Length: 303
Figure 1 (cartoon, one colour):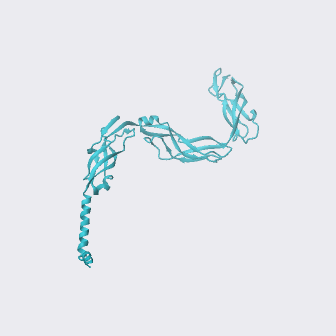
Figure 2: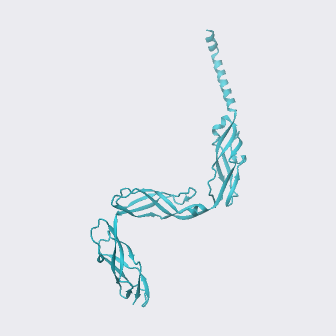
């Protein structure tokens, strides 16, 4: 009975006292000063418009702080290292970081900063055109092959620090899958450059066209050269390098092709000129293709 009386007599007062004791403990606990190391991001102010940072600099600092326990949770959010580059010049700069450069909340004192300096390489901003290189994955269907890959546009502008722009040669596309394709593949894809310091001055994707055809065979034919009136060519025939689908069963003959030289209007009698032979096909031009004429230009005398 005495224990029960001891516990429950004046219970309200005892509970109030316990609550006040808890508040006192909480207040004392929150006022305790602790040391802590926080990761602080580096911020740059007033960067000149014609300069860029070209090296991989330190982007965060380890800052040891002295602060009340109760303010620990907000310390990281409210702190940053501010570097003012209003007087920056091209070249390498070593920038010391002091307590005065640390933006911090009230009640926080700085004990140490690591690293205590940042090395920056500043270069002029430059731009140039680089080629777009489509990336393909997979293989066309059996019996088919990729004959041409074209990007539109074929070049894009990249911008960044001068030395990195000079080294850039290409921008690559997202991978385009051509697995089991039996015809042209068209895709709109994004592009990227390997150097993260470079920016692509293009927001929209590029269009890539992949020409896929039946696998082709090729052979060389000797075809007579027909000269137009008033021309005397130096050769009487040319060679045609011709390709066609492997499933094309007919035998190719020189008579299926016509090769001519035509006298230009401005040509003068006695003049020696070089002309490109003009090739026409008599049959099925959609399947047969003249890939090359040898020689590509023929000497002729104007009569």
